[in-house]
Image (cartoon, rainbow, N blue to C red; front, side, top):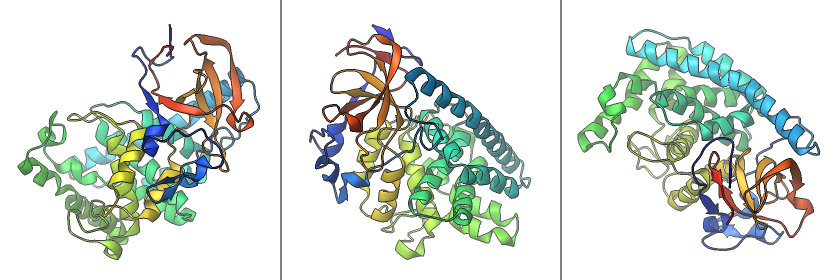
Length: 368
C-alpha cells in the first residue's frame, strides 16, 4: 500500500455520478450534454491547467509535474504578499487606524494581469488548511474565487480589479467583532449570530472613513450578504443588489463550504458544487451559478482522480470542448503502487477511459 505525497489518511473516494443524481458518466459526447438541474454538462467547469500556465501538455510526466510545481511555488509568493496585506488591514481595523486600499488594487492587479497566477491560486485556495488565521485566508480565497466568477461573466480588467479588491476587503468588519464570537469552536447562538450580522454594516463604515471615492466599495461590502430573492441581511433583492456583491456572496458561500471552520467540517469542491446547484433557487442567479461552475472545476487543477481502470492520476489540463476528459498524470497503478515513471494521459484520446471518482489530496492510496 502506498501513500500519497501530502498525508497519511485513507483516501475518500467521491464518485462523479453522485453529482448527476446517480447517473454514470462515461464521458462521451452525449453525456457532456446531460442536464444538471437547468444546467447542461457543457456548462460544467474548465480549468486551464498546463496550457494556461504556458506548459506544453505533451511533456513527460515527471518533467511536467516539475514545471507545474515551479509555477506553483512562484505564484505562492503572491499569495504570501496577499496574506501579509490582509493581516495588516485587519490589525489596522482593530486599532481603528486607516489602511492603504491602493495597495489592494496593486496586488489584485497582479492577479488580473496574470491568469496563470489566478489558476494556481485556485488550487492554493481550495487546499489551504484550517487555521486560526482563517479570516485572512478566507478573504484571499474569496477574492480568487470571485475573480474567477467575474472572468466567467466576461468582465474587463477594470471591473475585475474592482471585484477583486471588494472581495479581498469584504470582511474587514469582522475585525471589530469579539474574538470569542468570531473564533467560537461551536455553532453560534442566535444572539451571537445577530452580532456577526453587523459586520457588513461595520465594514461599510470602515471603508467610508477612507474617503468618498470608495463609496462604491462601501456599498458593495454592505451588500455581500444580500440574496437574489431578498432573504439576505438587509432584505434587498434582484437589481437592488450590486452585481459585485452578488459575485462576492456566491464566492463567499463556496469558500465557506469548502473549508473547515471552528464549528464545522469542510465539504470537498465536488459536493460543494452539487449543494450550490440544489440550493441556488432564490439565493443566486443562474447567470452567476453558470459562471461559477464553468470556472471552478469539479475536478480542480492538481486534484487527484481515479479512472475506471483503477489507476489514480493528477489533473494537469482540461479541454473546453471535452470538460469530462482532462489530461492527467498517472501516479499510482490500480493496486495503489506508485509508478516509477508517471505517465501523461490525455483522456480525450482514449474513449474507453473516464473518471469515476475524485480522491482527496493528501491521503493514503489503496487498491479497491
